[in-house]
Image (spheres, rainbow, N blue to C red):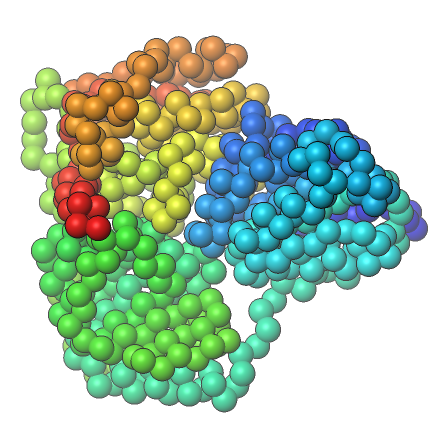
Length: 563
C-alpha cells in the first residue's frame, strides 16, 4: 500500500494516538470522510443523537483518555456543537473538531449552497470557532494536508484545548503517501528554557526550606495536563498536607493519609479552611480559579508565599516565568525536594468527614446523607461524573477510593453536559478496562436537556450507572432565585421507562427513597458488578440540597443583588 486517501490518513493518525472512537453525526459534506473510519481496524463511529451531545461525549472521552475527535458537517452541524467545544476550551480538554466543508471549487465560486448564510461567505463558521480553539486549519492543498493534520493532532493533545480542522469534501478521497504513517506524531513537550527552569526550582526549594506549615493544593489542570503522578510523588516525598479544589477532585489519591479534603474558600469545612488559609506556603498545581471552584472567589490565604504551577508558565509570589511548563519543573523539583523537606515535621491533616449516623431504614433520603454515603459504593478505578447543580456540590463531601476519576464541569457549567460526557467516558473506560465502572449523578431537570444520548449507550451495549436525582425541577436555580417560580418547574417524566423506550434489552431500573433502600441496593454484590446499564431514580425533597450548595447559592444571590 504505497498510497492512502487523506481521509484514511486522518483516522490512522487518530488511532496511533489511541483515539479509537469518533463522535459526531453524518452530513452530506462529511459522508465520504466517514466511510474511511471503517477502513481502519479497531476504529468505531459512535453515531450520536445530535451534535451538542456529540461534543459533550468527546469531552468526556478526552478527560479519560487524553484526547478525542468529533466530526460534524459544515454550518448547521458545527454550530450545534460549539457550546460543547466552548466548554472543552474553558476547562482544558483536548477535542479535535473535524468539519466536513464544501469543495474548494464550490467555495471559490461562492455558490448559494445549503447550510450557508446565503451570502457566499464560507469562512464565517471557521472564524467563529477560532475564538474557542487553540489553533485552526482549513485544508486547501493535498500536498501539505498530512502535515497540517499532524499539527492539529499534536496541538490538541499537547495544549489540551480544542482544535478546528476543516476538510473540503473533494480532498478526502485524494491520495497521500502511506509511508508518512511510519513516523509517529511527536507528542512530547518541548524542553523548558534550562536557565529559567533552574531559577524556578531554586526559588521553590528556598521557599520550601523556610516553610513551617506548607500545603499542596491540586486543581483541574493537575489532571488535564497529566501531572497527577508528579503531584502524588511530591506529596509522598514531602508529607505536606494536601487538598483539592472541586475541579481538582480525583487528581490526588484521597486514601493518602496526607489528604485533607476539598478547599472551596469560605464554603470549605472550618477545618479545611483553617488548614489551607493558615499555611505559610501554598504549592498550587494546575489552578483554574473560577467562581464555583473558589466559593465565589473567597480564597483568603494569609501568606503571599504562593507558587502556581501551570501548563505553560509558573508564578512564584509576584514573579511570573512564562513558558516554563510545570511537567518538567515538577520533575526537576522532585529530584531535590527530599533533601530540603527532610526536616519538615508533618502537621496533622483535617479529619475526614464523619460517617453517617445509624438511621432507621424508613428514613427519607436527603442529599447531605447521600453524599456522605456515596464513598462506600465507589470502587477503585471508578469514573464519577456529576452534573452542574446539586451533584457537583454534593460530591465534594464524598470520599473517593484511590485512582477514582472525577468529571464535573464546574467552570463552564452547561446544564445537561454530563449525559453526553457519560457516553464518552463509558466508551473510553471500555477501551481501557471493560470492568471499569462509569457512574453518573444527574438531576431530573438536567437530564431532560440531553436524554437522547442514553439511546447511544444502549446501542453500543455500554453499562454506566445512571443515578437520577429527582427533586422535581431545577433546585440549584430555586436556591439562587425563584423558589416558587414557574420557570424552575419541569414536566415530570417517567424516568424509569426511559431505558426500555430507548430499546434496552438487558437493563435494570430501581427507585429509592429511603436510607434503607439505598443501603440495600448499593451493597448488593450483583448491583456492584459492571454487567448492564442501570438507572436508579433517587427521590428527594424539592428544596433539599448539600449544605455547600445552599451556602454557594446564598453567596451568588448576594453578589447578583449587589452588582
